[in-house]
Image (tube, rainbow, N blue to C red; front, top):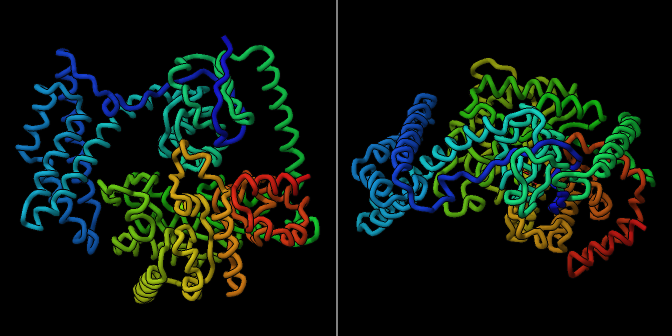
Length: 576
Ligand code: PEP
Ligand code: MG
């Protein structure tokens, strides 16, 4: 029977295919006691995960050299010892064998118990070990989860299928897309998560927040994913299929019309020139950015390089990737963002601190890079070397205060000296910019502008932090909207501070590429947009219909709005 499942559009498009369900990892959610005949298999899974965690630590140690090894070996040793600790292991086995707990639950219980014991100690050194135990347990739990996802991946990696899951990690999405995945229906997740960003970049339709997806959809059900109307249709009718064919024809015609704009200049109707930059991570992003006439790359997220390698990429590997990017853009400026791991950007390289209570407010982005100067310097050297091949700018993520930019500049200066001694060619200048995505950076932007050559507003995170609403949490959709007056005031403030300091300000969050927000951003004074290449032509098309002077004359109305509903009403009024 035909059934319509509503959700939220995370990536546009439609797709027709058979469903492949991925249930959340059974190790983590299943708190039912084990049956007699399940104990042995569960113990085996637990010990496989413990072995995997030991192996990861050994591999990590063998990959680290020089100063970095000195920094990291201490924690690797401490963690390896804990993984072989007889008492910890006996406790775990007992919880599974006697307590009949599943492996994930046993790990959590035993971890909490040992952490509490450490915390109760008088010796401050021993008290500090609590963090180690939490990190070790987190490592084993993630190894345990990977065991299921390996099976899940095998299951799901069939061509012509739609993945139905609770949420999906960006790395899994990339792998599945390579295997012919058609689209994703997620019961959780948000349109601003990294998976959603990746889906848009891969051109995969994706629906999030389709609440009952996992209970209403079954393996092999025929599904019409209609992200255009924010819904998935289970058992579509002939009428649905004919609408799908209509959409395919329209999408092709719209594609042909937009293609004629590829070489057109980007101007508003009243003649204001706007710079359109691309958020590009892959060679095909670079090719489509050029094919659509981007003015450069406004955001190259280097963490995807780290995720692809599942370890720390070497200086040579990074240099090659950055040089390809620079050469690929044929002399147009390229903005390379330094590593932004942490929070929801999973870390396959083993750098992110485990067990942080609040990773989104933790050691992420530049905070993490500065904690590992040797890793950071490897990246800096690779960027400096690649910058000889074309104009490069460096963008620093998660900046909170000026001293972070000062520290990054100092590391660049040191790396320059080092490379000079090695007789390596160096670029003359390398502009250094800051992402504005932490409220403190926005509010104190004038101080930041004394040290930054340019700014890029990261609205995905800025919205999350201004609104105290997790960008990946779909339960907060009515709060996490870019139309919030508080967010608009912050954005407008940053743009005008940049203009006064005569320094370029771009915006590279997801709203930059969403035509629903183009008029709004022009009204706020934005002159540089950075977005996924697939969105460039639509935004250029929309800009050509807008009267920038009139919109800017109305900006005070926006800034004086009390609620996001009022902002939304104003935008509708302007569109009429
Ligand atoms: C942002 O936060 O808006 C941004 C562009 O960075 P990312 O999405 O990679 O966190
Ligand atoms: Mg960000």
